[in-house]
Image (cartoon, rainbow, N blue to C red; front, side, top):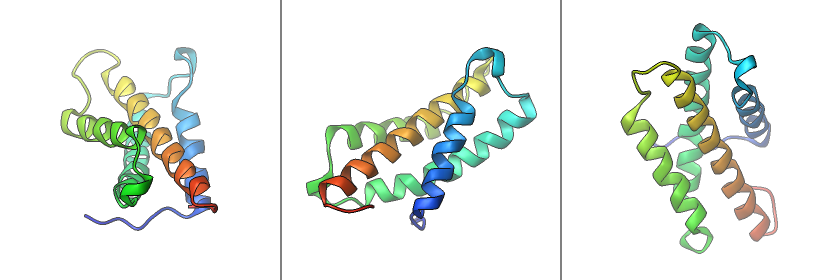
Length: 115
């Protein structure tokens, strides 16, 4: 599935959504909010995944390969059926989305413009 790349505004929203997820335990969202945020973060991730995969070979790095592999593993495995499994999964997705954003920012800087 080819997803439309995120605009700069959408990438900023993705980063803010990741900030909302990557909080300390005392600020853990409710189970309902965890479910909603999981859908949101996965949607950001799917589009960013497509953008990172579309990078030309000259812009591919060990970091980009690692974040693509992490995303694939997370999507294949899903959340673990343990206490805090859904929240832990959501946090892993958010860290990977941040990785996608960093890879794309680095690729944009390397080519001399925003990506």
